[in-house]
Length: 615
Ligand code: B12
Ligand code: SF4
Image (cartoon, rainbow, N blue to C red; front, side, top):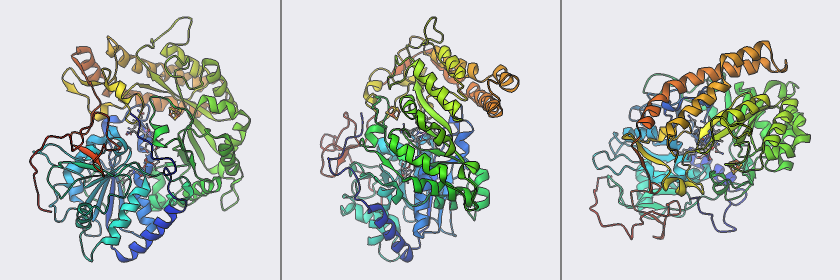
């Protein structure tokens, strides 16, 4: 099920709203000495192809944006911790500036939500009187905000509030809290007071337990779908987020200082950047169109050029990944961006393309439409384009691709010096090899490699919250457990077969490993070095082969356990999507906007005893 749409005319934030909010937070920062820590949840069991290497070399944009916004406003005592490189971080131990923070935040994707829950469990070890206000955010909260609240009476951890939207929602919440906070009042107490008075109900994009601070929530309130920021130039500059990063380390406590600017690049040589949002396609397995309420949103070309330039000049970061849904979605917009980047120079006059490179995502269809502008895109620093080819024959997924079109698009990219990076989806009906057709997985890999793909992604179909297919996937396809092993979030990474009607799903699991082994192997490495199809880029190609083989070792190490369970069988499937176990309702008492169709609202829920806990 997709997220519902806001009413027409009320989908977007008023122009200038974010600028006003930034100004308001600056005023608050003069009066409130706030200490904040935001932590990115990361489950190290997900470290495999196709994201091995990049997952630890790119500081996530969401948690950086939240920390950066606080820092920009003047809340200097802010820290961003990534479990990616600080695995043993324990929120209950954290102190910054000699104090337990006023605010603790988590950011998580679904696949990392096990680690998010661990952090929430740990912070709840702090006595409620001194506990920071705890906010859960990030993509997992867009679709499953109830996951921030335990329902187990013997293990009653919880966040205080889940943010189901973007930065503006968080800033609006902070604005209301800091406006109403009494002198010396703990921020969490302000939150509980305002929540109980209904003073947070108007902030679209929050989910919190109703009433006072009972140990287990009796009911959750959803304040609605967020309003979206259209003009991304209003966002705080990303340079701020890199000033508050916690250095990597093995310890569980925070270090005294954040990473020094001259060390940032070493830790995160790649930075993700918000450039544009939106996609005109409506793929049923993708949450993006509904998430964006079918809106196109973007930064101006000048702002994008300035962000890349400053991030390079201040931190030395030389590669950027555009968090675009489909960068070429609007051709005029894409052309304006690449033309601006092509003429941008650093302060010393060097063209920016000589110092930086960037990559992003786009469709085959739109890449072909942009064929006359690919040279300018390369001049503007575009070095790699990830393309959701999914299935070259368009049997399983149709979005304007075909074998010929894919090859043509790849050829055009390569001729213009841009590396094509295909992403494939391996479905139940796809054979490993096909004869006289391009349907087979290995056939497609060979075609893509022949068309000069430098890397490849092969993911199996998994349930994706917020998509049209979500419910269908949970109605008899998605596994609940295999051989008695529950399907934990870290397994829903596209690398494990967790939704299939295939008689022998373990074959699908093996196919994925074979596909990677067919693409990344010593023979291809040798050919890349001694018999490259073209001299240009052959070392990078060889490097990609080496990295791919190292990543494959991880897959070979981590997936056989699941393969064994699949072979043993005893597959139990879900019959409905996992709705909130806690009654979930809107502010007015109706169905919660973020609830699933099978969601129980408070009116329908059976009475149960409350478990009060002193605030
Ligand atoms: C870049 C990217 C990646 C990169 C890097 C990820 C990273 N660590 O930065 C790579 C390529 C490694 C990657 C991999 C994967 N990704 Co990815 N990725 C993205 C992408 C395109 C951009 C992320 C980004 O930087 N956005 C810009 C920032 C500013 O936005 P944001 O993260 O959403 O944060 C905002 C809000 O969420 C909120 N927020 C975030 N944190 C917090 C915290 C608090 C306290 C608050 C209040 C608010 C808040 O405020 C932020 C600012 O507005 C998104 C799609 C998208 N357009 O967002 C998918 C996305 C995050 N990926 C997704 C997925 C599923 C994956 C994979 C599992 C691949 C797969 N199988 O499909 C892997 C996982 C790999 C791993 N082991 O971690 C999903 C997550 C869905 C979900 N429900 O969890 C997304 C949303 C795409 C989608 N399907 O819609 N990904
Ligand atoms: S083309 Fe890509 S971004 Fe657009 S709807 Fe389909 S999968 Fe999503």
